[in-house]
Image (cartoon, rainbow, N blue to C red; front, top):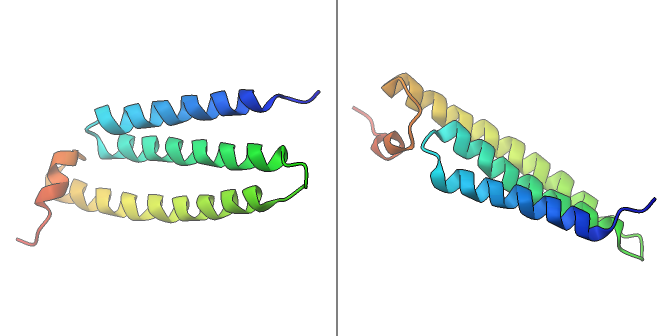
Length: 104
């Protein structure tokens, strides 16, 4: 059974919409990071879905998805390091504190 491409696009757009809503409405930095990861995963679903439905059999979408996963892992590591620094200084992870990071 072949799943239609539209199902993947609907799933991807739902994940993207949830991610954008999370980035706009959340004040907790970890929740914003999770929402950004949802947006990145929505793009990965699109890359893999379009690569799978390519009649030539090109795997470039899969390769792009793997590179995006690697970049997202680095982004998460750097983001979490910044959040740990904010938590050590303020005792909470609030986005409002990110703009006051400076050496005292």
